[in-house]
Each structure stands twice: as structure tokens, then as C-alpha cells.
Length: 206
Image (cartoon, rainbow, N blue to C red):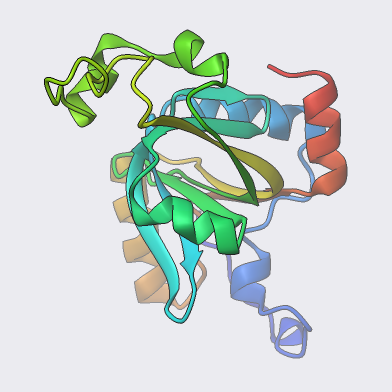
């Protein structure tokens, strides 16, 4: 149900319409478990790098594997994202489920590996070849041995996510009622996992 705003909250350091969305009550282990369940349902994300002289640049990427709080992507080493990461290793990966309104934002530092990284063969699938093509020279053939095949690893240092707590119909009702009454629509919870949480996640990956 929408929550009313109180006059005493007007002078709060945090805007009450924002503060009501944050979940500071759910135990961290459950927050982590629900982060994994949420993000594992979204296989395509936007990888955002910082381009020198321009700013953030995003592109759609398929997750090759999640390792705890960190993400691995197979990619062609020639596009600009690799030159972006040579100059600035900071990156962000975002995911959204348009049906449930769930979303995930992962901020971290990237490392890149060339084709000699043994993880590439492990992560490679036949579908990957569709994004590389076979150039017919016996070398650039879209296989795991293709020298264009590289790996991007995003090591998380901050995670924020939104988990919906209402159905699609409930979302519409909640927003409509809040709009009519001046209350705050409560359609889900927003959570954050900081460096301390993330280090713990790496020790017990799921």
C-alpha cells in the first residue's frame, strides 16, 4: 500500500520519498541470495565504459558467466570498449527486467585477457561464433581459438538492485493510488551491497 509522508519528515536529510524505498531490514545473507536470483534471470546487460573526452558509453553484452559478484564476458578485442578500458578500467554493468521492473547495477573494475586465457575455451559456446563470423582464412573462424576472442572480467566493488514486491497489476494499482492521494508508491525494495559484502560473497561464491 502507498505510504503517507509525515510533516516531520520534510526536514529529513534524506528525501522521505526516496528513503522509504531502501531496505535496511532484510538480513544481508538474504539480500545476497536474492541478488543472485534476480541477476541470474537477466542474461543480457549493458556494459558501460568511460571514453576519453566523451564520457560513459554503453553497449549490450551477453553474460558468459557470473562468478559470485563478478561477471565475465566474451568479446571481440577490436571494438572501442577495449581501448576505453586501456585508459580507464572503471565500468558499470546494468540489467533490467521490463516485466517485473527488477533492475541491477554493478559498478566495478575491469580486467581484460587475450585469447590465451584458458577460461575462454571453458566459456565458449557455438552461439558465440555468430558474433564473430568466419573470415575464411583458417584463423579468424569464430571458434574459441580465434585470436579476436577476448575476455572481459568486471570485478564488482558496489552493487545496487531493485526487487519488485508487487505483481504487474499491483504495480499499476499502487502507482495510481499514490498519484491520487499524494502518498508514496511502494512497489519494491532497493538494496545495496558494499565492498565488505562483496568480499564476503567472493569467499563463499554462489
